[in-house]
Image (cartoon, rainbow, N blue to C red):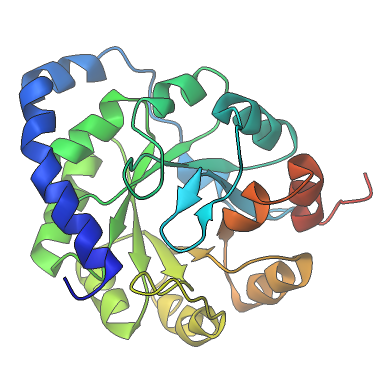
Length: 265
């Protein structure tokens, strides 16, 4: 494989038949009926008097290794909710990020705000699975998915009342997102093939993304301080998906308050 993103998707494709065998789609669909109604992420991310942060929970990354030792995901989720996160992003990939989909229902118990399932999704089974485990929205990576498949998965989510955050990294990804009628668009400053971040990506792509009216724009990766958030809010960004700078902070609540602009409270 040419890069880590290709390798992750290749491994996920190998794993999926086993997952489907253990828990057939019919059972997954039955579980959906046991879930509470989908929470409105659009309302959660509406621009208002304070910044909107999608706070992420992830144990490790293939680029940085372990981010935080021995943490309890439910405790972190409670801290995020208590100190002002608008939405939570939950990594559910096992081999490269050290998590699993089983963490979603556990966090659902303590987090009354929207939950984003962040994984490497390429099959409708994973969309149903996301809803069955309590997610309110799910991630689609435009760089890896072709336009037709992305549109199909987006439509499948809508049928379940569940939007997708379409993650983009360049102009071609944005064109695919527009063609698929995506409403929730992320700009990822991290190159998933090598792990490097460059905030210039959002600076370059945000004006293009906002040419389409009615889009909710999320800046992903590389945000470490309040000044960056203020800069991108001035560009029209609605929300910020922040993981590493929170997960590696000595004081997670303090870091979240700093990012939100009320660190002295």
